[in-house]
Picture 1 (cartoon, rainbow, N blue to C red):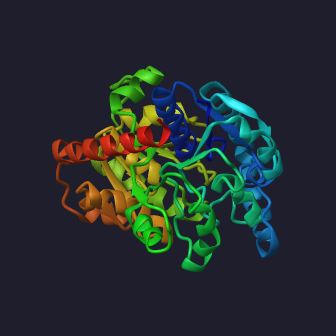
Picture 2 (picture 1 turned 30 degrees about the vertical axis):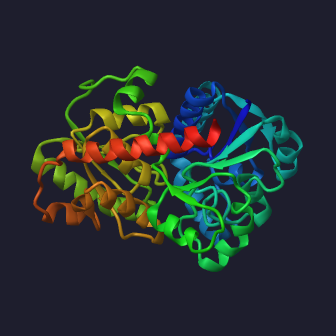
Length: 374
């Protein structure tokens, strides 16, 4: 059986690349092979370009944003090159497809296609927000006649009316699973097919497996706290002032990864601007503590059993983080902002309990995918 995988594999985003890699590897373990359908639209390339040009009323804002980025353009260029190198090294890719029609022309060579993980069913995801609904059709396997499987696909913050547009395609799947429990509950009320709730694929590889896959080792660097955020430059400037005070108070270095803001290092806060997905894993693995507003930053830190705090409440899609943290008993690790981090009483995470729950979810998620493919 030849298995295809369609997901967000080529975004310049740590989580997208790493979830695609984990899904590919687990499918290979189960089915013996996996090829990623190399669907890369013009819109996706636009939103991840070094200089991004917004459409409509936000065009002039993008001019100002690009002006701020200009001093760091060379670092961003290097970062883009590192991502492309990772994408070509880590993945078994089909020929590149730039449009839905090109995907339709080649996907019948697969006996089964797995759609997911990531926000591939979310019209408000970065890749699809300004694109036509037709660009989502390949992720919905619209018109594909082989075995259709979804794994941990996410609709994120889609409204019920928006979901109704894609329900007919979801109902054509042989096996459907989504990442968030809240999403599973919503879709069960709307779909004719069974909806499973599974873990993000990055959880399907254990800490040891991630380390072995990329030859990672612990205790490589000086002691530090990692701050990883997807905030804008304006928000990050305020945060960086807090982090400098925190570093001085605790006598510890802070490393900041903030790919959406052109920030500069200070004595206390080292800004890492051109990190690739593998180096990102290494920085999480070696951090004493991780503070992040990112979904994958949160769950990778949990998977690596780190002292992690997840910033939630900033946007409507933060339920993705609160959903999984609540399920595994880590809701006390949810904070509203970095200032909130300073006001709470810090207690050690009981990872024995957390890992016990994760292992149960990991086993059932793996069995779901195995049953779907074999």
